Image 1 (cartoon, rainbow, N blue to C red):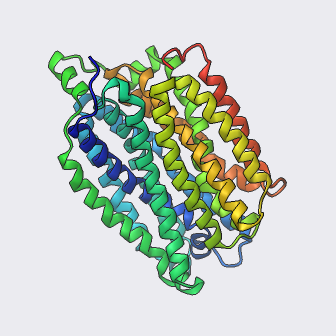
Image 2 (cartoon, rainbow, N blue to C red; image 1 turned 135 degrees about the horizontal axis):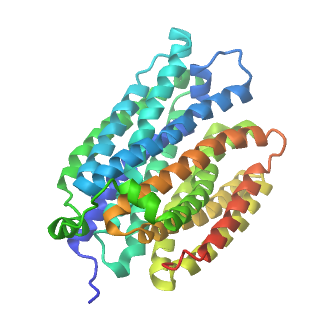
Image 3 (cartoon, rainbow, N blue to C red; image 1 turned 90 degrees about the horizontal axis):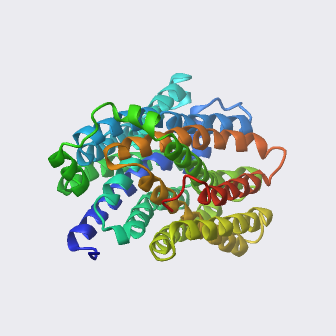
Length: 419
């Protein structure tokens, strides 16, 4: 018999979302400070476009490291428990984030500075590779079936709040401090704060309980009898390909629209940093609302119908936004916010992907597909677009639009019967 969400469910959602928000903040704050980081960690005589390209290259390294962390953490998550790995991943994120805030710059140590920055981003990538899929599986195995979409939508909104915190923090730094002060010391504040909050989140996750699904598998002794990823690659190839493709669509919304666009606005259209980050804040706020709406819609009208509606809306709104740039500030804010709302449709990706894999290998299957796809497409997209926009400023619109069409097609793929 269907049951409603209980106080325990709400507590689990709140703690999982809070921890995810803080960890996601740690991972994405880098991109909001990319212009100033580029000036501090690379030679002063380097052309702006090359400096930005190399800065995003280090950003991409974090994505390329995600599969390693995802596979290892998910392996033990399927064998030893979701909760243990859920807590470990956030500890592994807090330490390198704090370290970035303490790194010397190029002016102090030369080439050692970007190399240390690269190392810290790799460590962050290892941590986030286990966090995001682990969080989705953790929540999916706690909430009742008829609230599956809303549960994952709520968690995704929590993760997205981390992006909002990053945008607000970067905007506050640019508002309170002048360019000279930001370059001198203020850029360090978001990283030091993120590391400190990350350790707080480690403590908070002590109060989470193991998922009922994993406890039942332990009781029935139905845990994976071999290395989980081996089972995934041998017996669940179609499910893996579906999750890979859907994650590529997800990267178009998050990496391009939310993370890449603030720097793009500044570099291509010379929008002031404060204005670009303010518009991004509005878009991220509507993104959070979109996650909740599309998660709810998945429970009410079905995941396939919600995907078609959401990705069609993202295609149309993103074209309207990018084709109208730079535009008046109010138009920039409104169109960016509208696009941000439809980016919320990406919450349907984990809803579909989690359902695709059976419980004994669910963490490993989702983590492998999600992280490999994110490493390749999420990691390389900022670099590709940084080059592409030099010849066509509409490149982000074409890229996002093409992947929206892919998302609509995947909603009707033969192996998406669970939608």
